[in-house]
View (cartoon, rainbow, N blue to C red):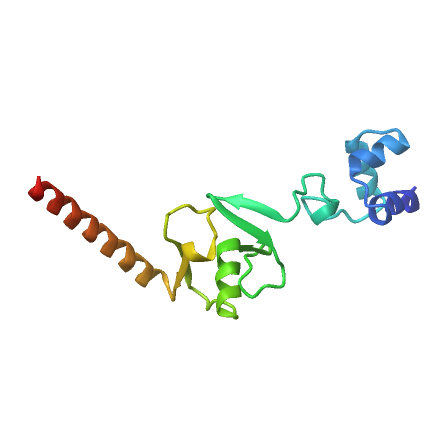
Length: 149
């Protein structure tokens, strides 16, 4: 039984539920047998990448930003994802962005990653200064508009 479990689970990369369907027991029964025969379980989440039933091609959207799976990238997050805007800026400058740099969208549309809509700042501090300048300009523009009417 141990050899069958190891073959189906590790070699064929089936999930416990699929193993159970083949040998005629529940997923819980498969889990019990795996513990009993010391068959090591895969980490939580099961199959990785394209082997996972929830695989969507290595692209995801998080807080409105588009991210791509590039595990070897120097600025990839702990799951291996890098922001699309960052990748585009990097392709323009021909190098990785420095750690801590911030990519900015001129039109505030997080999914609009056209090169002409992007710029980057060396850190969050100058990025926030940029936004403060924009707020001041907007207030001055509103004040000027009110005075001119």
